[in-house]
Length: 320
Image (tube, rainbow, N blue to C red; front, top):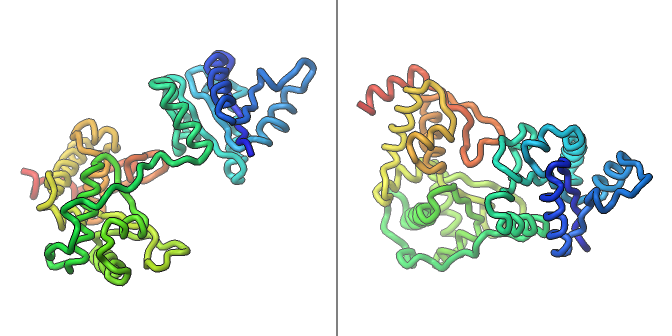
């Protein structure tokens, strides 16, 4: 069964919208495009809201300087947001130029269609057909083929998994990795289920990982797992950087600027987002900063970090 999409755009973006509509049709996707659907004498409102939006699986909104000020686009967007809340329609913002994302859409994943149109179109088609762009799990690293020695008093099994989580994260330093139980276990198949579950439980008991429990986990005791800042501090001798220096650097900048967001921290320190997340989480957990969290801050786990008396005391004691 073909997927159905609705394209919302301003008149000034009609050529861009026409191009996207034609390319989607060529790939087996049914497009409701006003140029094709509305005939002379038709009711514009009835056609758009009763036929176009109500029958669409996906609502594509072309974002440009013109469209964000378009009355019709706003009306269509409001309707689509209601349908999204009802679980009927999925909303996908498409950027046709570099602009500030409107507030109602900041929490959504958007696609860049202007920097590389072909790449953006491929991602859009994959999204509509629910095709994951996630690469397949690679082979087991050569250094993880058997149990390693204890690290910091952990069991050999927990040390092995902790080391593996560190190693895989260092391969992709920009964003935090999370693993399903089966995915992680496939990388260390020499452990049986009981050993694997016990090792994860041990790591979680010491705060080195966080797990998510979901239905259908058997034979595992958890569904998803990812490391915490404590894991990196525990295994810091295996890292190419010192996570304690990240913590000190972030604290110093927060103390100087009084309050700051993730993008500004990144531009000042040039530390990858995942490491900034760990440093801020450490400072928050130990009461050294105040953190305001809200939607639309990806890839950061925080919105605004604010300095306190404890921040300044930390900097005085550890950063001078």
